[in-house]
Image (cartoon, rainbow, N blue to C red; front, side, top):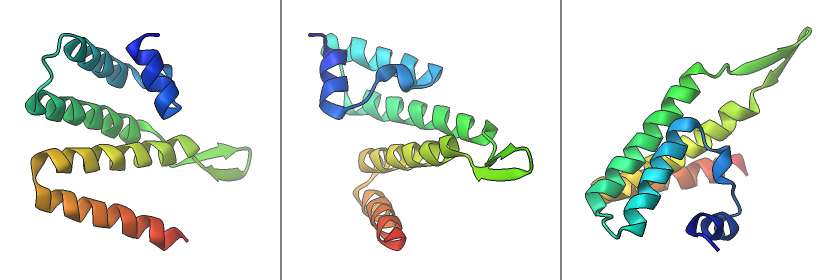
Length: 115
């Protein structure tokens, strides 16, 4: 079983669902991991790269989808925002403990606010 298959099975996701830039970043990370040259600095750079890809996609995604006269929330935009928040949290852990604490508190308060 390949490393990608193991990751997909363990996390319950499909790498094919990533956008082109995220997929390329993932493949670059996979190459580095297989060659055992992953460093915290490289991981930070990869997280920043994936975060930038999601930001770009989010900017271009409409907030609502219109069907005839009806207006619906764009589910893809909601999922992109969740992914962006995850990348921001990961990035903050790599940059500074204080910023990580703030991001984690913000993420948790967002979850509590929905309940």
